[in-house]
Length: 280
Image 1 (cartoon, helix red, strand yellow):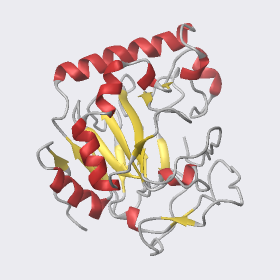
Image 2 (image 1 turned 90 degrees about the vertical axis):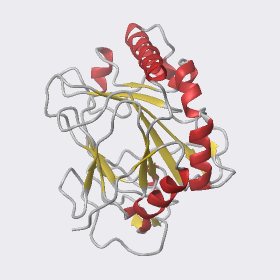
Image 3 (image 1 turned 180 degrees about the vertical axis):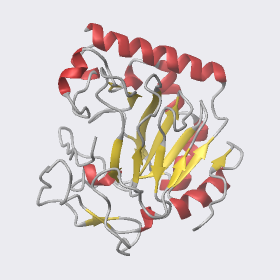
């Protein structure tokens, strides 16, 4: 067993955050937003979510691609895509100087925000109720969703509107797995075909993983739970093995805003790839 140091860092300790991230593939930024900032983000995201269900927003902002059952989107919106376009609070948060400084430490000065193509920045509402089409997600690394594109590496950011716990679900990660050369998802639980143009592996080194990535929600040797508070921002590497646990409280919610900064080459207009390989 390996005991990790505390993964939480303040805006005044970007050096420490970058040090931890380089070793483990993730870190938590705490204190960048005020409570009023988070309150405004919550109100604007919930308003956008309600507008999607009511048909008051263009179909561009709704989503079924991530859901376990597409029909559930008619009754409840687990996702609002391109929420950065309809929430000024989200736009301010994802371009905050502290976040940009941290990302540039991790990816370099040319890192760019993926906010206007594919799904943009997404508001996610995970809950275990019958109306919900998103409760959890199985093991994956982000690069596996687009293994043919040159956009990698990247750092995902997750602004937490709700703190996390076993009651409402939480992030599971395998620290250091971003350093492995993880295979493209040729084997996946959804039997989705991987294009022939895909890179065979992706990772921060050429070292093969010590064991295969599970196809579902299995316990992984060395995994840890990442618990956060309201207002925290999780940063994680595109090559990090991660999953999300389902809530144990039937009435709990886990809401956050997720997107990413990238260091590779931005795709040409209209060029997209999304392989839905992770279990739901």
